[in-house]
Length: 91
Image (cartoon, rainbow, N blue to C red; front, side, top):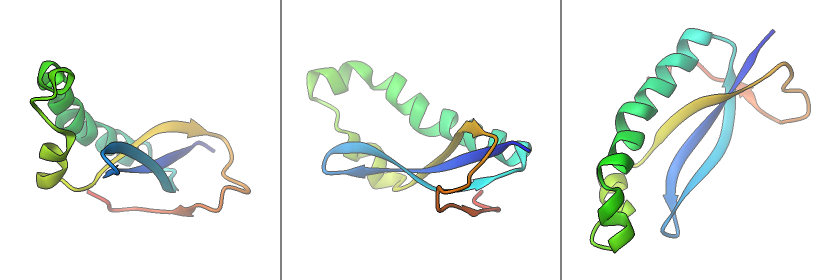
């Protein structure tokens, strides 16, 4: 069985922090979480790369509007010993 690790992505101390919060075995839910990530944070970062490099745009501008984003890009065959729970319905 495949397990997709769900990460909670937030702004912490001015940087992006990925925190594993659980897993899903539903590949469709994993795709939905990753599509949402790509359509929000990833697009915003791509669009604002120059401003971020120049210091005229801050990461907090994204996270003020969208405080939390989730991803499920990491796949494994076991979650034993990780202390993670099955999570469904984040979106």
